[in-house]
Image (cartoon, rainbow, N blue to C red; front, side, top):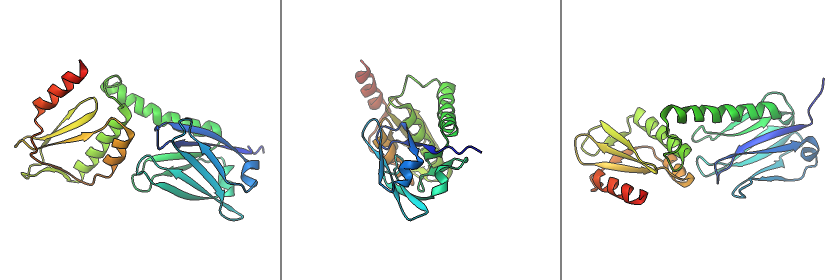
Length: 219
């Protein structure tokens, strides 16, 4: 039996939003030194340090909630055949994979393929400022609505959704109340993840004014 003395780590950068792939050797792990892996954008880093004789602490900055999550792994987890998957405990977002190189890359490819298929299905790949942030934000709104937490101040829960390149416009079908959810940057995504409910208010956010602003900006 051949044991691979290295592991591949793929983590989603909390700054640029892409997956960063790094290789961790068994020799690095056994050295006992703190190991840092920086994303190519230099906006975030993953840290691995020894917890005790049999386990290690992995600290991962999270794009979903903005916190850094700490996971404790046994030594054998870095050389086992199965992949270790780490989700944000607050949002469930898959943020890190550790395991053999082939399977880790396959898992990330699968995630990205599912996302690409969703984009192609709707034909929005060239429309949004940040397609991934837009679709992730739409999923957040969908989950909030499914829990009955999307409604208008008038009591109506029949809400219309209109997509712009950088934002989501929600408006009540029974009164002038509306709400804008921005969705063009990772910072917007972090803010949207904090939403537990969405209440539409009549604050004069008329769709005609928003359309005028959109058309002027596009010229």
